[in-house]
Image (cartoon, rainbow, N blue to C red; front, top):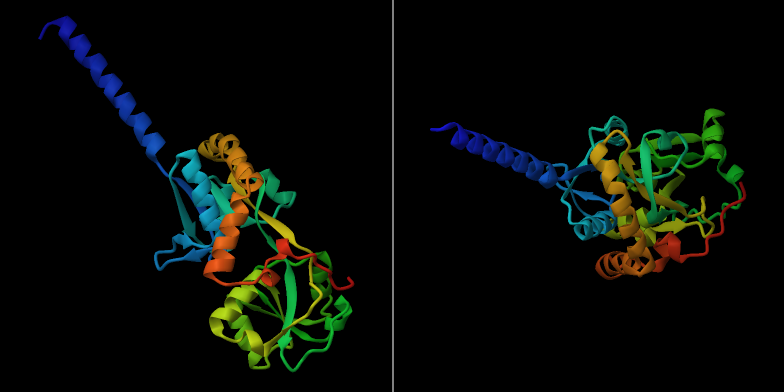
Amino acid sequence: MNRVSWLNLSAFALICCSAASSAEQNDRAFRFTTVAYPPFVICDENNMAVDGLDIRIINRAMAKANVELEIHCTPWRRSIHEVATGNFDGVLPIYLNQKRLSWGRYLMTPLHYESYVIVSKKENDEAVERFSDLFDKTIGLNSGFYVNKQFSQAREEKRFELKQFNTTELGIKALQRDRLQYYLSNITVLGYTTTQMGVEDALHIQPKRFTMPKPTYIALSRKSPRAMELAPLLGPILEEMRSSGELKRINDQYLDKELMLSDHYCPQHVDAVTIDW
């Protein structure tokens, strides 16, 4: 083989390798993490998120961006750690707080809103007007859930007994068995869980909310260069979905039509009045 042919062949090989490397990089799916949280996140036996309101929203947004996404279900603390260190590109759904801004770039279009309510057995319909009405009571809450500063402080002061559960279903069962007097829950999760369990009519939900509706978001890892490249593309897509009404249509299709949850269980549809803190 002469020198010219050899140089041409070498150049061609370099171009092919470069193209293959670029294609591999572009084709690699973004990796997000989450936790099982029906009806917002539903995971399969392989610990992959396969459905839920938030999963439908992010999958639709990523399809518009023409990029692939895989969403892993992991324990919550691990999810936060993996995104903070850049091992995963993003996490959802997540509250906004100042500490998390150090590792997360938030996309400021809310996925859904959360509002806590107080639920008891049907026969316990005594009105809870203020937080102090729960003092000296036994209260249930999902493990790892944060309510607010007042709740955390009262817990440290042992103003009430707190029992924590891995799922809302376990908490409701404990309430039914009189292991608790009250259970605190995200109202949408409560509506979904009690409907699935067939016990909705056996419970009393306090008309006053425990907390005002609070938005949840997607946070992208600042340690992931690919995630930072995705942020200016995905953020406007989510905002356009909100302003066009597409997010509400996904919400209504899934929660209202498929799960048949009334607006009573959707905080963003309700003018909430809370207890006196």
